[in-house]
Length: 110
Image 1 (cartoon, rainbow, N blue to C red):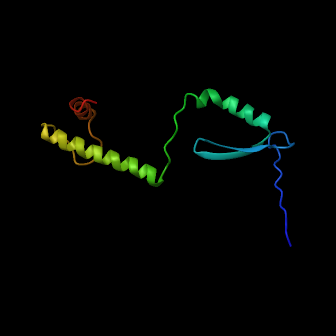
Image 2 (cartoon, rainbow, N blue to C red):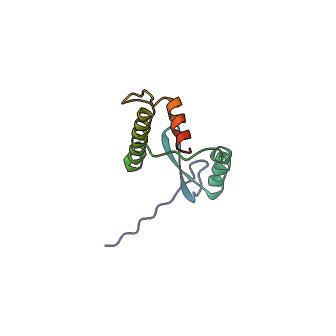
Image 3 (cartoon, one colour):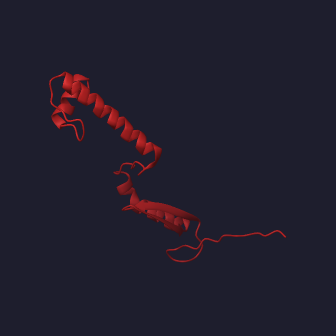
């Protein structure tokens, strides 16, 4: 026996027919709302001044974040090695002092 299942979206703002589900995040919370084309555009227009000035966030976890962390660790190791070779006192762990980072950047054309 065959079945046909239809999903009918209802505009969460005012009722009526919704044309799409809009997903967005704010303050670490993910949201989705079913909206008509008109209401979806109103939401996008309202957010546009903020979106145009915002930067895309890095994912919180997963391979991409680990790759970034790994490259920062390698960079810190290189900075520490350079600093020691150039007479700076630098700890084995923790944040590298800003003066040392700046000197490293100047020495490496950065």
